[in-house]
Image (cartoon, rainbow, N blue to C red; front, side):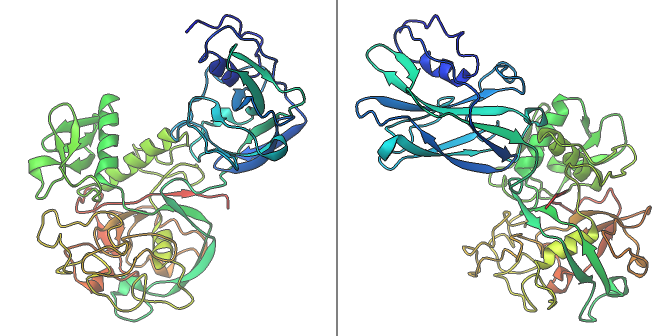
Length: 468
């Protein structure tokens, strides 16, 4: 295969250059220009559009190309092609009436004829994880013709390119999260069966937010620990992980913990076999918020927490622990104005949640947690899918979950009615949801638990703001 020599003419079509370099022979091509048909697509959004190949050439092979340029016409983003996989920036699909798409070779979306009349439908999708520097970028799409005998690639004589301009926004929930819509509910114990700290009943209005569908897993937390260790953000000693140079513990691990799942061999954190998808346990409040900040950075978001003081910037767009009010509202699954003891109703059995002697296969199998999402309709004891009305799993049982708030037994008497953030200070933090070692009454949606920030028999899930 010879090397293509002349690609400089393709100032606006990096992907076209890349495709031509895959084929034998020298090639020339016309420049794809920013054109008449300009659409917008937001972060996390999808835009479907029709491309005109100009004419349906029965014997030619058509290539639908997606190429990238920056905010200045002709300037590529970082000077590189963007590979088509989920963890970078773009997913492309091409729908043809006669042939399936071929795969993910850079900007090559298909090697099939357009439909009748030379038309084809394409879908361009931006995942929620998007580097904000790409906002304003233009993605060009057009049909070209490849002559297999010569390797020549060119625009069809009257093809109409389509430009998609990347805009800011979040059109889809972040992966693994569910949108909890704006709403008002009455927070607290509606059945007079709880402790005094669950009263008085009080109305709370919350802005929309996203919530993790599942509790954070061992696999995710071990990934964080390895990244943090490589960056010098943590110290590992005495069977625990600590904030580097500090006395705040993040998680206990290994032989120091009964039923541990995360191991340390002196260089790397690994997860015990068969426990990757179990919720991470033995995490302190500090370890949960450190993970939240790390996850924010990974997704090009602004971290919420000051790890020195523990204060939270609720205006930041990153991940954080849910407030206690957010947690209860999300856990109830939108079932109000009828209120129930549990996320699904007023009765409970072993097919619904992991609690003491609930009868699941993990009852006697250390570390006693069930995998996240275990109660999906295929669980033992047999039962239905237990996702709540917002699509969340395990908001009753399995593990206590950290909330952002400081705990006060009297906070409900003075709580703001809109987006309450919890007390401004305290000695202990709020935990919610119950866990595998407690009886069903402790799994009620209204139950409040308090633990010092160093308490470790707990897991967590994260929230983040929404503009919905």
